[in-house]
Image 1: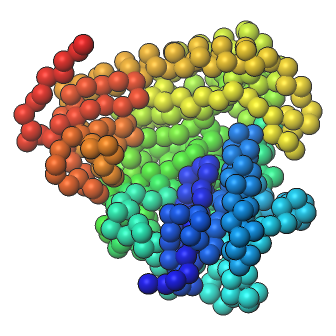
Image 2 (image 1 turned 45 degrees about the vertical axis):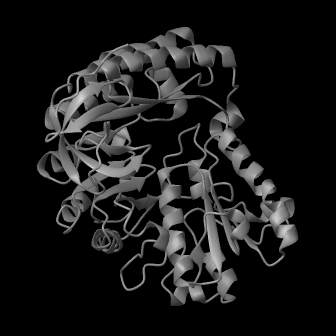
Image 3 (image 1 turned 120 degrees about the horizontal axis):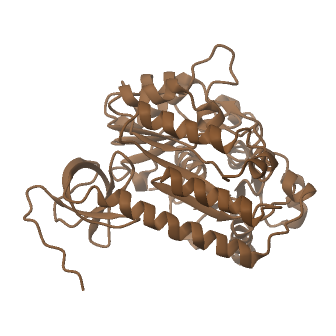
Length: 450
């Protein structure tokens, strides 16, 4: 067992989760062992998010809380990584945070690896390049503390974003859109599958843009068809899609392929055309309605999730009502809701007044929340008494947690080991956000309502 230890604190999106896991793999290749205690670490990494101000504040708060560790142990290596650093932000942060040793852009382990090895050429020699992690001999090794436990994993396929919605900080912090090579993605999927991973989720800020930055390159539908043949994988998902690039080829790939799950994450962000134009989304609410209708026609019984921002600069009561009406009409399975908050450096922050009072934002948020709760309750109730296949990942508070093909959360109480298994279960209770089920070989327990 190595006497050198690393700890990674991760905030934010699934991309950061994937980056942290793959960074852990690289650190273990260098001989470091994982610890879940920051105070025990020789290398302490903060993988940060700045999509919202609260995420940035949380990261800075944790960073300052560990400063005493550095003062007590000058040899401790502190690495600040992710969107707080961005692709151009290291120089300014170095002056503000002199106790941080290494600043790494998102998805880039190069600066930390070079610092630890004292070898700037190490990056090239070990196949660790900017925005790529250590995949030795075509494999990525799951960090030791997750081996035998990890059954579902994220695989980034598109880094960065070039769409530049007016409210979004991601293009400024993660850089321009860059698709990973097809062979690299497939090698990672195969490697994960040989280590017990049964489900993968392909990630991109705009995942349906995969391959569009490469002339004559494969697209997302091509990638899904190739990954469907990877031995050992049982389920494949992808997120997040943009309405402008979600083509019928993707819909038909999902309909045709047995391992690709019929669940789509397609954000609209607002249901009013003027607001959408101010957001620079590139489509109208009618375009979106037609897309959802087409998806449901091509992939019957699928589920669809959307994102909505309330209180965007200039949003009137009438414009909000258009969003409310759209959500009521389309009856999405999931709606991820957020109140608009300006992010420094974005177009909306520089050029638009944040003129919707917080009280109004909260009222609009709660109205959509209540509407979506009603919609999700009705949709999920259709599954009561039905038998559905559920992929189980882990046990939480005595119950196994898993998801249906349409990504609905299901809990089962049993002493059986369900980790990494797809099991047919009978739904015995449904709610707006989750469901309860029993194994088919278990007697049905009636639900007693108090």
